[in-house]
Length: 105
Ligand code: SF4
Image 1 (cartoon, helix red, strand yellow):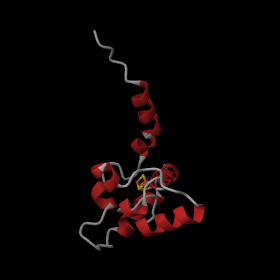
Image 2: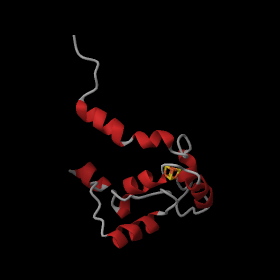
Image 3: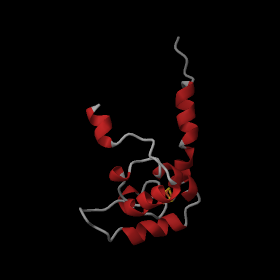
Image 4: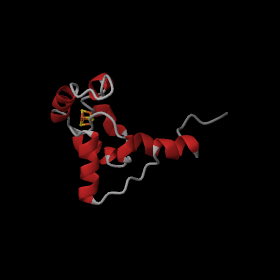
């Protein structure tokens, strides 16, 4: 009979992203991303959610793992341009593959 225990790597992933359960934007995805191309009207509402969020530090570290070209919406009260500047300021090289690398690998 197969075990119902999660695989250790699955447990690691669950632990690593458990902060997302406490995100102020949980279930509010539409508030965090532009409704249309070049829409900036969502930013103020999204930042208001981030300012009250108790996992903004974890969120920022997560967002900084991604290549700037793949960043959309607001993460830890930052726009993609601000996140790219933060990566540059900290000397962070994104560890995540770009979307094109994942799709065309
Ligand atoms: S800081 Fe903002 S984007 Fe990040 S989890 Fe919290 S509400 Fe969501």
